[in-house]
Length: 88
Image 1 (cartoon, rainbow, N blue to C red):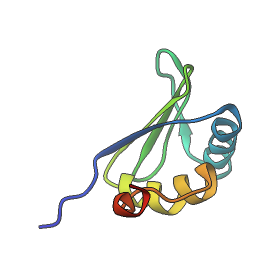
Image 2: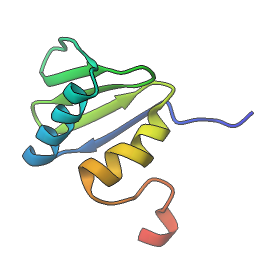
Image 3: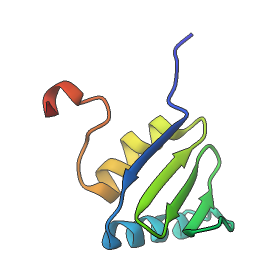
Image 4: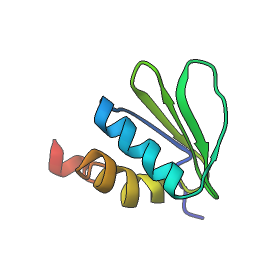
């Protein structure tokens, strides 16, 4: 059985945080409260929490797919997950 990524964290700048928040709103994700968070949203297979200090935490069974196909290309503007050898 293949192991999947259960969580991911990274830093967001102000523009990236706003872009992700807009994505979550437009996708109809459920917003919920988390202490010290700028915002938190729950989608069908993943939850995202953007903390006030700029840290983003992505959790859930859809984490790897969300990071590869949405977060990195659409929000962060690059691809890093699975490209460790290329970047190092």
